[in-house]
Amino acid sequence: MKAFFELPERIEALERAAQAWKGTPFRHNSKVRQVGANCVMAIVGVLEDAGFKVPPFDLVPTNWCRYQTESAMEKWLDAHEPWFAGIERVVIAPGDVVGFKVGLCVHHLGVVLPGGRFFQCSEGIGAAILSRSERVFKQRLTRAWRPMDYVIQH
Image 1: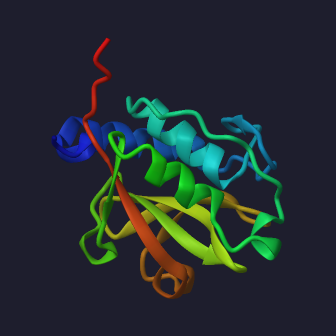
Image 2: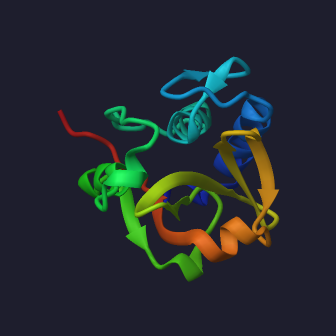
């Protein structure tokens, strides 16, 4: 199986999708481009707009990471292995979903873009494209998953 964002046209679609979502305000458990989204739903929106079929995500409370040591986000990504393959964070590539530790567990996601950047959506900032040299990326990055070119067989 190949990485979904291996092809140049898919990477271009990812870039266009991230640019379209940029500026979306943070809104918990929402997924409406330029109206509101949280980090997971913004990532889902970007991946879907770039052509990647994302498995459903069960919504969780905003403050989950303050009281739980098990990450709902890690559990979701790990449970959908045909769609997402866990990878070493040192070999991240465009399209990879990256998980950041907040509180007691991974509770923030981003998606890697070309050119040393990543897309994320957070309270106070909203959806933004940041440099991978940002402190949050370097210090809180915990896990990474690669979207795979997976087709469900019926």
